[in-house]
Length: 370
Ligand code: NAD
Ligand code: GLY
Image (cartoon, rainbow, N blue to C red; front, side, top):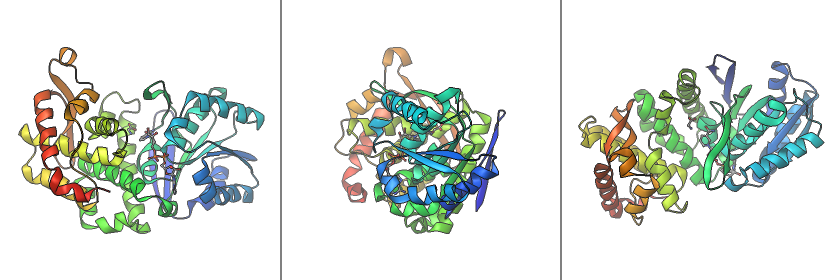
């Protein structure tokens, strides 16, 4: 088992990463001083696959383990569903020291986290992430949120879990597109902070795409250590933490314009290439580094082009506003693989030029799309 510590001023917590951790949830709760009751929040897909194991591990340690089910989908990450969960928690007689266990991907983690942060002004939270993306990203760092109106993640809190339990064995049931979403974020960590990790992934890509347990455990622990280090330095996302958004500005815009035909990971992959191309055109990144990024993404089965999408709409979705931004936009850019910086000095015309090139590259690379 790998353990990564997150050291914050208010509280420290551990991220455990190993195969078979679902069977250790009860022991983990006991270790942290909890007893008698835990409430699992999950969705129907994860419930059918993994609830039994998690529930049994609690019961073995003498816990009663009720569960609450939220339908599967981003649209249920809402205030309406938070309200339903408060009602359920009250009817299950959840008290201030009753831990909530978020068993699922990032949607369940964000929603259950938000509910744990606000029910009775905060009850203990355990994150049990079951997607690759949730294991390397969303379960760590304490961002919890629901979507409200047209806006994503616009109502939320910073609320750290007591522990994160990432069981790598549950990843084997993930659909391939969900694996791709996680791999895009994993490559991102290498690009922004750890050249060695990037090289490790480059040399063992098949072990990662096939979710070899030992290699995946190693990679997840390195990614979570990077996120932990960044969150420790900037818990409230006021500066350094912004670098985690490398590739996300363009990526989110592409997801939106494609009406989510392009997945999050695919959008981030294209966005990472766009940011690297801008860095290269600004003279700060070597062309060879840009090519390494393109190559690893293509080999991982992720797209690096925007064929078929409307460039003007992408720029619009990036909230480009000439008047407000003086013709410049903010980007996370690269000096080299492993070293990024934030620039609010990127010309929109350069972004447009790069998007046009990404469009041109389409024909050759289209077959690499998942
Ligand atoms: P998700 O939670 O929707 O899960 C993706 C799909 O995989 C769902 O259908 C789910 O039911 C299914 N699933 C989950 N585990 C499975 C398993 N082991 N086997 C088979 N199927 C499984 O999506 P996600 O990509 O995990 O998370 C996306 C969400 O995370 C978004 O809402 C995003 O805003 C949020 N997010 C939050 C943070 C943060 O810091 N809090 C960071 C990144 C993303
Ligand atoms: N996923 C970005 C962050 O946690 O800040």
